[in-house]
Image 1 (cartoon, rainbow, N blue to C red):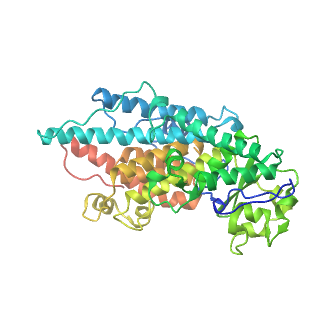
Image 2 (cartoon, one colour; image 1 turned 90 degrees about the vertical axis):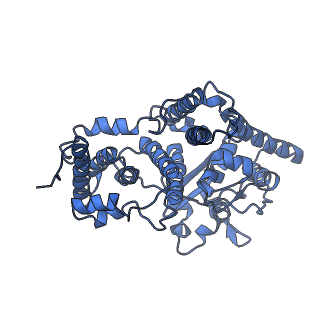
Image 3 (cartoon, one colour; image 1 turned 120 degrees about the horizontal axis):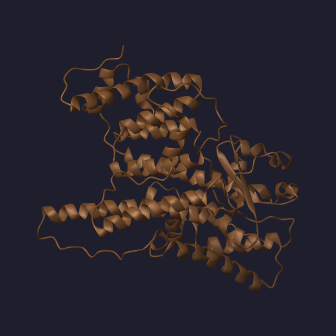
Length: 443
């Protein structure tokens, strides 16, 4: 969360750190390398499957069609590849561009949505002969040329460059030196006063992309923090952050952290930077001191990308399950006792109605997050359950089986009967598709 846009700073020395981002939510777990266990017999090679499931893949709906459909296919595929290259573990974390990683995410999702719109338009033309043909969009050779809210990826990167130049111009107009406090004060003025950026309570997943935030000036806390970090980076200022309980705190890197906690006008500089969360007695952030701050593990750029992806997963799932309020991904794991019950829950009238496009977007975000965290068992479990809800039973069995290799014993015991029955259901469907009758049973 970033500080309120109305906050202003008057400090003129390096001893006073002005307004900077408030706390952001850190929405994914960081787990160590787990121990392995024996998988189901239909899963042969964990390492190979982990790599395969985390590699770039295009959505199943993207079948071959017209030139424009192929264009969307290629853009989506290229965007995933570019994203993977940007966050590759062979690259140094400090060289990862948060902005580019998030813009590649947006480009892939936009291509997927445009693909579906094109398919819908073609279906409408076949049904209604008197409907006029909509104009085709301009064709692009690659993802870098794809427009996102009127600008290419390079254009949005240039927008961040322009914000940094505005900050520099503001500093020149003040005829001051480049002290940290003054630079941050100018950044706050440009972002919150001139540009009007503000944190909003975002419920629409389509408003959770970087280009949307830059074009509208309104978005969730993590996007505002990323913009702040990117602008500071262009000005030679390093902003660091760390997970503290439910919050993600960020602050300017300094060799004198005591100054962050010095109280002026009733508030410490650290509280001004991170907002009310450090003053809330219910928050673990309220117990931080300059000494304990040094003991926190600084989040990497990959971690921050992971936060943005976790937010997308949550919002897309919320949109997908809007008609079934409160639906949990893991609900089927607790209630299905027999194969018959599982078949009934899938084919019966009580099956939840989910929005397919939003569900697929959640799955795509989960695929990207698995590239970053291939051994996160809870993430892989949730990914497998989304595939189950999307009726991709074979892939769901594969993902949930891999999850069992990394999950704690008690979680694996919950997963095992469900995966066995889901695997049997898949086999039964194949059995009946071949014209056989009868029902397979677990012995």
